[in-house]
Image (cartoon, rainbow, N blue to C red; front, side, top):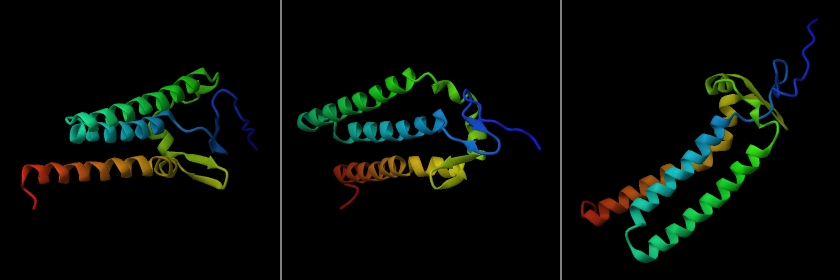
Length: 136
């Protein structure tokens, strides 16, 4: 019988799976929100009133994700995942309700930001086509 113990520096053991999300998951989420913000800037940023609201939204984005990044960087154990993102996606991930796949954890965390980015892109493309007169 092999003795697999919890390693405080890696936050992973082969028997239990990952317990901390890989940094790539956070990059996907932040990338989706940034994508949505940039699409909205492209669609609404040229009018003064809407550019003002976009500037407010951009400030909130920077504050929210900037403070989160600072706090995550100050954790002594945040150096946890040096493994490749593809390896993380293939391994188990432990949740409160039981283990799921790495892909499952990515989907559960990123589904809303990615879906909103896709929907926002579609809406802004439709708006651009309406403004150009190619629709309706």
